[in-house]
Picture 1 (spheres, helix red, strand yellow):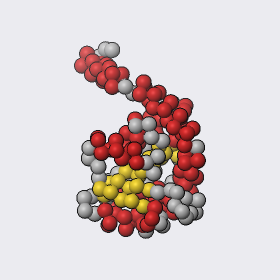
Picture 2 (cartoon, rainbow, N blue to C red):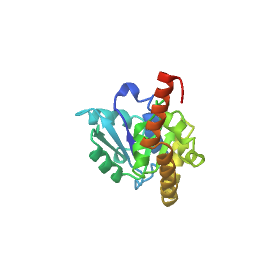
Picture 3 (cartoon, rainbow, N blue to C red):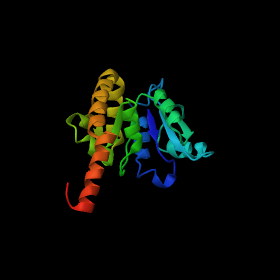
Picture 4 (cartoon, rainbow, N blue to C red):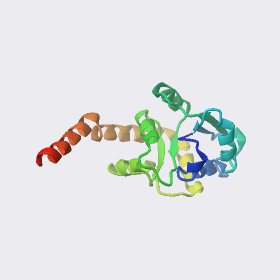
Length: 191
């Protein structure tokens, strides 16, 4: 599973990193042998051990956690998505949540907090609600993570359908047309 973002300790709670990590400390996901592993990507360069130490305080087993530095290229992100089978974004507050959109675009199952702008966009599609979690309880996240793992094939089908709907609704072409319409209205007062 992937948890991605800036590893700045000042935003750990806002981004819900503690929620995601505590989900992995849940009894259901923390059984040996460890079938559930968390890859946190976003530590400042050279501070991976420091970030890991903060995350370990949330109760996750050291054997379940891998921490890497921030990824700053599209090719590295593509490789990263090939390493995991789920991306989670448990933010308590999130303007949009680009990482979840990137994961969706890659066809990767996602779980996103209802407190994100991306969740708002997903709610525009009836099918989009399956990957939105309106909870800050780690146990709820653990249950949903387990569900994704156990029904991975179904999740992949749903994600593919959601990806296609999202791509049609929010295509570059449509968004540019809407922008031009708004600009035309602002300048000329007409559509």
